[in-house]
Structure formats: structure tokens, C-alpha cells
Length: 205
Image 1 (cartoon, rainbow, N blue to C red):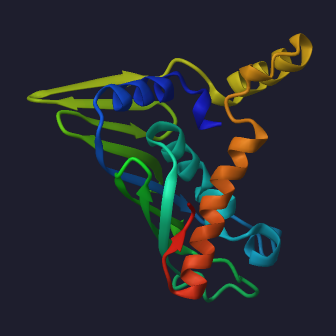
Image 2 (cartoon, rainbow, N blue to C red):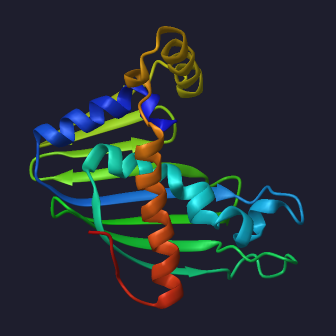
């Protein structure tokens, strides 16, 4: 869904124009709002917090920066241990190496407080830093200059419009994340699960 923000395509273009990318940082920080025994809390059903929740940041990183070649991760459930039947991770840090050489880290947690909740993706290029935060802000940092752009669209609405138009006009190219591309993001998040389970780096190539 984050692909349908107008600022997302702008971020992607700026990153490509200012390649190479050195470092990528992503965050999905949220408050815990699920009821007891919700299916997401059962990792065997949901795949875990990274697969179900932080996947949006993984997908955004792939879309903006490029494909991932290897994954390492550290997960735990420190702050939700008091809730019965929680088998998913709560705290998750995933280290990525992109095929273009960039290094990255994506952090997710599902038990922050309601006063500290945000999503963010930062890309560090040689002469440019681009920061996309929450659902509508893009900051562009250059030498002694900071520019902020606020998105003018609702990504949920744009996603629905694109889908309906793609079906009515038989134009699958209007879909910004076809199933094949979604599977590539899923592969990265499943590799993060495997990396923390096996305690090793997982190679995707």
C-alpha cells in the first residue's frame, strides 16, 4: 500500500538519481492493540510480527532501494511475555545487504506506547539523504538544505482505484505490487525468521 503514495515514487527517483546508496534504515514502531488470542499472536498462523506487520517497511525498502541478497536477524519477545499464548516476536531487528551493495537495518516493535508510534524509511546517498516518515512526509536533505514534501493522496484509496481500473480495463501494469513482487518481499521476511531461528546469515541469491 505504501507504494501508492506520491512521495514514494519521488523518493525512489531521488535515490536512483543519487546512487549509490550506502545505508538504509527502516522502522515500524507501533502500540500493541490486539485482543487476547488474536490469530496474529500465533506465529504458526501469521508468520510473526515481521511477516505480518513490519513487512510494509521491507517492501518499501525493496521498492525504493532494490533487491536483497542476504539477511541476518535478532528477534525476541521481552515486553509481551506477560500476555498468554503469544508466540510471535515483539522486538525485531533485521540486517540486510542489498544486491547493489547498500547495507540496511529494519527495526520493528509492537509494544511501544501510543505517544511513540511511527513508520520511517531513510536512504543515505553520497550527497543526499531521503527520509519518508509515517504516511505523508518526505524530507530531502542536501548540503545545508532541508526540503519537506507532504503527500496529497490517500494510499488506501489510490490502491483501490488502481485495482478497480486494472480489472475494468484489463491493465495489470497499473498494479504497483503484483503477486510476484509481493512474494519477493515475503521471501525476505521469511528469511529473517529463518535467520533468527537458525542463528545464521541467510543468502537469497
